[in-house]
View (cartoon, protein in one colour):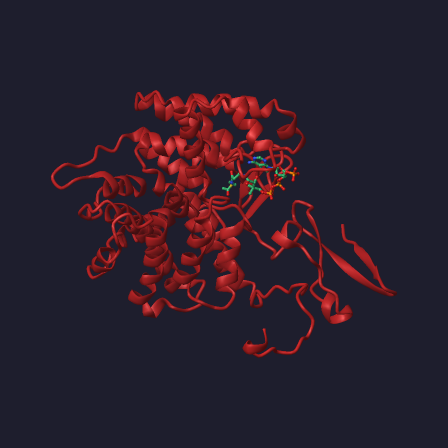
Length: 428
Ligand code: ACO
């Protein structure tokens, strides 16, 4: 299938080629529009704008489909692991056992931080937000790896940068938590898994090793896997935009952390817990809360509901919902917030406002409860998301460079004052 669209404006006609993806998504190619007509398109928030062609992730928001490199998220969640899925997203194919072992070993080797990085952690005040520490420290890694400050997106140098970032992000994340609590730093263990090591660095105490329960290790692995990539979301687009200036990978992913921090993006799972706690502590009737979320005269939203792309259901939310039950059962936790979440979901899903607007629970609706049950503090939730999203950011940075993409530089429609003369301060 191919096609063209005709744009007819003010007597000028332009033919726009249709670009068709492998899942038959159609985009109109406007790359020559301005050169041919002087026109640009206006799409604040980019809801109708394809910023790139990509082979990494496919989403069909209407049907609730999410696939990494052609593999269904449900199948990966059941059969794969975070590191195997990370390899798939980064390199485009499922690794052989040998490739996977080498990838695992490369990451395990890089878990330690340069000893002088400790002094950077010590420079942050108590209560410093872990996301701010994470972003700063990922950028700081650039200072320790000057030989990797390139746009190399394949070969040994790229693989080394991947191993360093994927591995050290866990250490930085765990240490940022410890720094924010004034606790001593726990060195990585050489004998535990990727997720087990993260839990160890978070929760072990000197001479008192944290017991890594298989259910918890599995739940963290699944949480990371479900967050591995999500095509051109706010933080991934930020990574691509930053990287398009040919800045290095460390700085590009640090920019992604900043974008992810906001409550409308990665910060939503923490906002969900705050919402559920508010309802619980203050005994708010669920129907009253839902009414407030519908009322446009205030800022209340049903956090963890709605998505820019998913308009039917978020497949990640379905998978996590089941996982939450398993973890709470294994840890013998009876969390009243989970019951509130379940009831709130029911109330909202039968409400005309949410039905009409196709608003369903997104991945954040249940992930907060899962993380809370494991003992992850709320201000670390978005950090957890960042660890999981790292392979997706790196894969997008890589793809952007391999496609030789131009620097990202959107246009605007200027709506300010026309030319006016400067008025000296005494005359204003
Ligand atoms: N609560 C109440 N109303 C909502 C909600 C919500 N959570 N989400 C959307 N709406 C309303 C909008 O106000 C809008 O109403 P209107 O048509 O009367 O003006 C309508 O639903 C349609 O909104 P969308 O265009 O679908 O929203 P948009 O794409 O701009 O934003 C977003 C998507 C930011 C996720 C939004 O749904 C939201 O703020 N949700 C709560 C925050 C959240 O859970 N974020 C996590 C997203 S997933 C992720 O980043 C991993």
